[in-house]
Image (cartoon, rainbow, N blue to C red; front, side):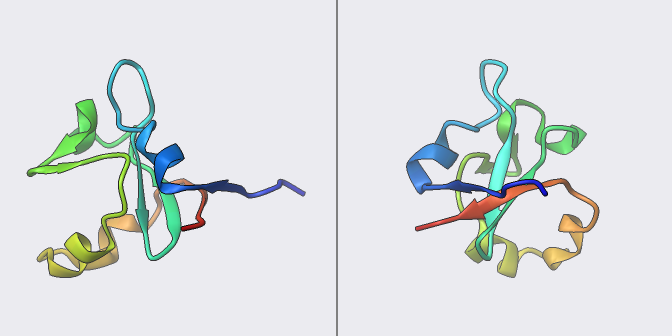
Length: 79
C-alpha cells in the first residue's frame, strides 16, 4: 500500500511548475499534479499559479471542479 504524502503550504509552494519542478495545486485538502496539462505549462494559468491552495478560486471558476477529474492525486494538504 502506498503511503500518502502530506504537504504543508510551504512544501506545496516548492511545486510551482518553475525551473523543472512539477506543478501541484491543492483543492479541498487534496493535492493534484497539473504538470501534464498544457494549460498549466510554466506553472501559470489565467492569472493563477501552481504551488498554492486554489480551493476558493476554483469555486468561482466557470468550469468548477470538473477540471480535476482524472488528474493524478499526489497527496493531502495538512494546514
